[in-house]
Image 1: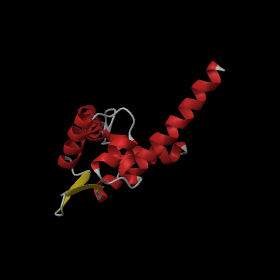
Image 2 (image 1 turned 30 degrees about the horizontal axis):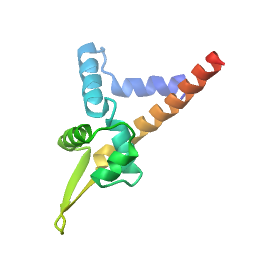
Image 3 (image 1 turned 90 degrees about the vertical axis):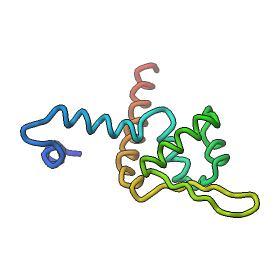
Image 4 (image 1 turned 90 degrees about the horizontal axis):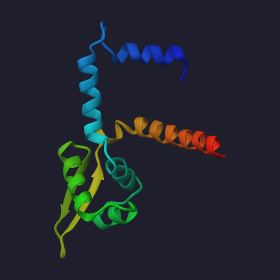
Length: 127
């Protein structure tokens, strides 16, 4: 992204004069919703087609059942995912991402891009 594009985007997002308290609060809100070790991997798992609890759990190495349950509840409360109970025998529960979740898809893609670049940068330093 060029400097002019970044500057224009910054002017659209940031207030004039700058309000540092508002900016910090916005960052904290965003980090609360998608931050932590597990939320983005859970979103990634859901976007890759895993809908059932056990499917999600198996797709994320190291996550515990308790942690997944806690994170899913928090993400549902923040309207990032929807939990649907399907009345059958046995009862099925499915999780899906919301349109609201897709609203930060570009952010996630940029984070993946940055993470890949960062890994390459560190690898070239250690080689």
